[in-house]
Amino acid sequence: MADTKHLLINVILYGLLPLWGIAGFIDWVCHRATHVERTSGLKESLIHSLMGLQLGIPILLCLIFKVNVLIFFICALMWVLHEFVAHWDVLYASPLRRISIWEVHVHNLVGPWNLSQRFLMHGFFTEYLHGRLEKLRNADGPPPFLLKISPAAPIV
Image (tube, rainbow, N blue to C red; front, side):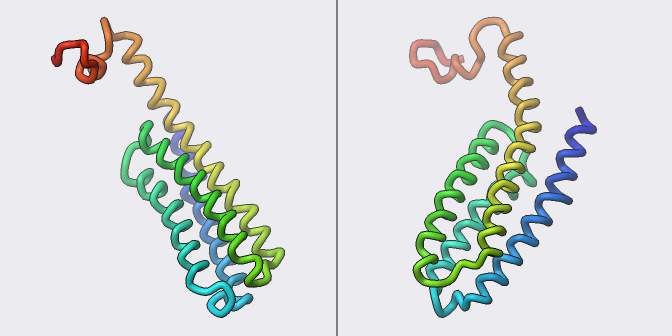
């Protein structure tokens, strides 16, 4: 399993993240070519900053912390929110400026790359989840965390 983890980490760090950076640069070039500062202006720039945060926060969380249920949930939630904001971005920008075919292609590539990173993280998450479930199965009686939060049970 250690070899699989190492491979997944390498695919994310040396494959998907650099491709994401290159795609972001191409997107920036497309925005510069359409003079976004004069067409859709500050609002589109702020939308893109929001989308960057929605992708940057999960990446930082995964680099700093061990992937667990909470981290995985935050990553999935941020991806869903990012997709909604990306659609809002296109809806806002399309009447104000020309969206080139290159920009459309970049957007079509970045979404699946982000989703594939989430699926690769799922490989880390499932091992964690299986370990937690195995501990619960092997324990005698109810899990200790249920004793602490159940109003009918005494606090142990």
